[in-house]
Length: 158
Image 1 (tube, rainbow, N blue to C red):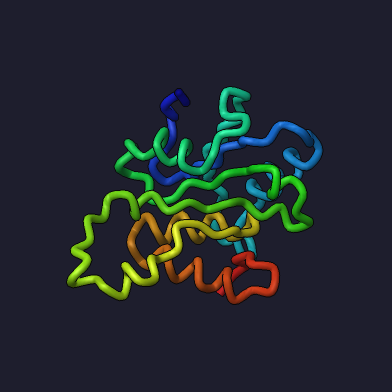
Image 2: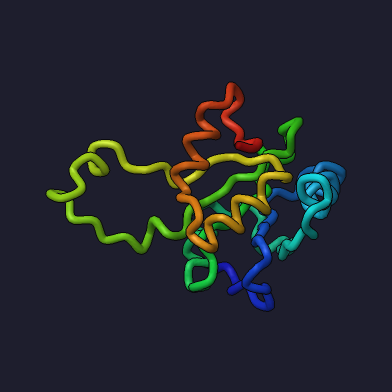
C-alpha cells in the first residue's frame, strides 16, 4: 500500500516519481519543473514526491493513494516514459473522473466514448494545467484533447 502524501500546499502541483532507473533524467525533470512560468510571470509551486516506495506504482495505484486529497484534481507522474522522453513529458492523471457517478441513459455519449483520464504534458505545462483544473477554469478533457492533437501526444500549451 502506498503512503498518503502529506504536507502538500493546496496550490502546489503534485509530482510523484515512479521510475528510479535514470538519475540524470530525473534531475532534468525537477529542474524543468522549478523554472518560472511564461516570461517569469509566476513562481513554480510543486510538491515533489521522490521516495522509492513509489517505484513502479501504476497510475491506478497512484490515483487510489492520492484520491483522498479533496483539494487535488490532477496528479503528475514521472514514470519511465517521462525519463526516456526528450521533452520529459509527465503523465497527468485526472482525479475528478473517479468521483463522477454518471447516469448512462443521460450521458450516453460518454458511455460510448468515455472522456480521457490521462495525457502527457511537458514540465512547463504542469503549472497551467494544475492551476486551471484546481479553479475549474478548464476541464481535464480540454487538455487531453490538445495533447492528442499533438503529433507526439504531448500537451505543450494553448
